[in-house]
Image (cartoon, rainbow, N blue to C red; front, side, top):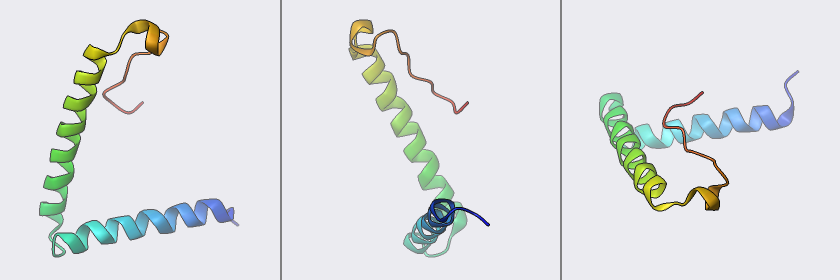
Length: 68
């Protein structure tokens, strides 16, 4: 039996996926394209933030552009 938290998280993720597909009229290619553009935008924002952030502010932390 899965913990309730895991079941709720899976349900929330499915509803987010359904919302993205509904927004794009069930066109999966359009949904993927939009999500890829969002990724590019967020990577640019992360690069700008990294350049403006001092090492002392982040205590040596550096952002990762890829998931581990």
